[in-house]
Every structure is written in C-alpha cells, then in structure tokens.
Length: 365
Image (cartoon, rainbow, N blue to C red; front, side, top):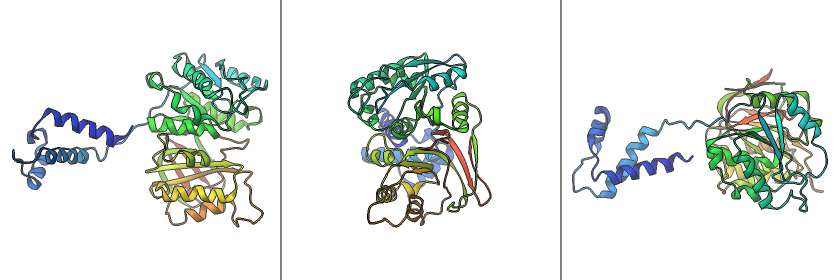
C-alpha cells in the first residue's frame, strides 16, 4: 500500500466535506501551532486550504508504520498446491517433494501446469495464470509452492487478480524467478517465503528443508553465520526484502518494484557475467535503493561467468566496491540462493542482522 496515496485520498475526502478547515478538529497544541503559522479567513484560496490540510495530516502520519500481513501459519491437515509459474516441469520428479509435505502432515494438490510443455515454459501465460489463480482463489489451499524458476513469472503477473487472496492470504513459496511474486506481494503488503522448491528438495540440505518447515508452521526462525572475511560489521533492524538480483533489477520501474527505504536487502544470483553484476549493482546505487537501505544480506553468487578479457573482480568484490560509500552492515556468504543449503527467509518480516568478526546473526522478529 502506498501511504502517500492513501493520505491524498483521505485529504481529498475531508476537503470535499468542508469548505474551510475548522481548527477545533485539532488538539489545542496543534491548533495553536497552526494558528501561529497561518490565518484562516474566507479569502484564502480553496487550493491553499487543501494544501494546508495535506501538510497537517502528513505531520500526523509521519511516524506511521505499515505492518506487513502474515498469512496464517500451516497446520497439520492443510493443503499445499504445487504448480509452475515459469519454466516447464515435465519430468516425474515431484515424488520426493510430495513425500516431504506429507511427512509434515500436509495434503498436496498438483496444479494443471505440471506437465504442460510450451517450449521453455509450462504452458501459455494464460494457462499458468489460470492455474495460479485457481489455487489463489481456493480457500482450502493454504500455501502455493512454485515448482521451479527459470523465466516466465513476469509474463503472467499482470493477469492475476489478488482480490480473493487479500481476503484469505496464503504463503507463496519459492526462489529465483519467483522473486517476481515476492516483490509484487511486498508492494501489496504481504509476506512470502524465499526457500527451496519441489525440484530442488531432493538435493536440499537438512537445514534448508527444516527451515522451510519452521517458516511455514510459524516457529521461531533465526540464524548464526560463520565469520567471512569480507563481512562489514554493524547492526541493523528492518524489513527483509529482495531475492534474485537479476529479477530485482528487471522489476525496477514496474508496479512490482519494491521500496528499499529503511529495509534490509537480500540478494543472490546464478550464472551471470561479472560485468552484469556490476551493472545491476550500479542500477541499485543510481536508483536510490542503496542510499536508503539499512543493511545487506548477500546469499550465494553461484556459477558466475567472466569474459575473455577479465572484469577484474569477483561478485563479492563488485558488491563491496559499489557499496563502499554506505555506512551499513553487510553480511556475505549467507546460505540462501541457488545452492543446496538454501535456507528459508521470510520476506516482508522484520529482522535484525548483527555482523561481527566472531559470529554474525540474522534473527526474525
């Protein structure tokens, strides 16, 4: 939700109700303050009075905090849907993931996109959107577990209607290309889970699997991370946002772009050229994201590529170089991303990161 837009709407409603601003609606303190700055007379232009109303209400709302909505925690007997939002999954490889969910006492529904084949994608954009919409609208589905990433989620995001979801929120789970959904949900004010997916479950570490269960069932989630040479010490608290760096980069300027202000930014990536990592980080710098965040958590930067003429820095060195002017803690080498030890993160949740030489921590509130 955009607080400024809501404020404007509230102001407009009040403005249409009153020709002049009655000072009696304010407390004695605020009324005195306003009278010292302005004189209310019928001769004041209507636009002037409207702008004044915006100013006053903005001062009252300056400390307002927007609380992210947490979908209901899973309970034994709940049903989870497995579906595809991007790349196709035509192999019979979901048995381990289904067995895992059932071992947690959950029921499983397989979406209609599993098995669809449209070149790289799991069916057409309309087919993927229809499958997702069906599971989104079904109140008996308590979580949607995206089968894999790749590319294609952005092609269906604008076909979705989240009206029913807002009445009955549910966990959306995945990583990589699912970052599109994570970011879009964040702009709507809902938390989601960055974690392993059905096709990665067979290779996932026990810690990656267990932290997903902890996140889904609402248990306390926290991490202690071994020291890393490039870590930048410090402590910060804020809402955790982010996901795959390439997807974040691609969403800026769209309705699904996150607001980085006062947030803890998590990034990870796979199979990118090093110069492109630099390009994306420079975009975050120039668009104001890095200027406004409180800290950074860097996950795996897996299988990075270089040109015949080397870029000269690895991915972590690039991130360190672009962020060196900012006095914020940075936790490198966090176990999340395109690795087997892809531990769960609740995006949209407040976290505290404490980065130091001995042991760094990331604790969810």
